Image (cartoon, rainbow, N blue to C red):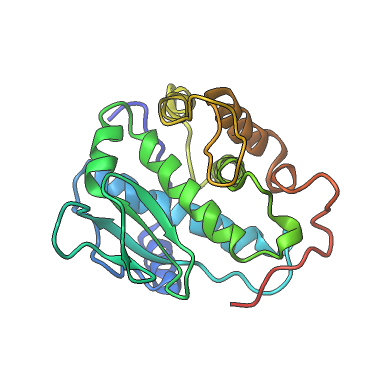
Length: 229
C-alpha cells in the first residue's frame, strides 16, 4: 500500500510490547490492512512511552489495556463505568478499567480516506490515558486539544526513534481527519474538541515541541509528577 505509516518492529519486540500491555482484552483486530495498521499503531505509541516516559515524568509508565475494536451497534457493546460505549466513536475509559477502544465502523470510515487515520485515533486516545496518569497541574482544561498535542508528540517521537515511518501524504491525511472531526466553533468549555485550526495547531505543536509543548506553560517536565497506577 502507499501513503502508510509503518513500524519497523521485529516480531520479538511486537510480542513483548503486547505482553506488557496485556494484549487485546476484547479480541485482536482482523489481520486485514486496517487491522494490521491498528496493531502497529498500538505497538508504536506504547513503545514510545515505554522508552521515553522517564525523560518527562516520575513514577513508572504503565500502559492502558487495549480493548481494541468493538461493534457499537451490537447488543453486547463493552461498557465503561457501567455505561455502554458510544457507537461510531473511540474512547479512553478513565475508570479503574483503564482501557482504550474504538468502534470498527468509525475506523473503517476514516480508513477510506487514508490509513494514517487509525494512527491518529490510537495516539489521541492514548493521549487521554497519559493525561489520566498525570497530576492535575500537568493537565489542561482543553483536554481534547491536549490529547491532540500528545498524539503529535507520540507519533513524531516514534518517527525520530525510527519505529514509525511517515510516508508521502500521511501528515496531510492526519490534518484532513482533524479538520473533518473538529467542532464548528473554537474551544470554549471542557469536553469541546476545538475548531479545525485549533486541532491542527495542537497536533503540530506536539510534533514540533514534543511532550513539553503539550503541558501548561508554567509547568516544566523537570521533576513533574505522575500518578501511581
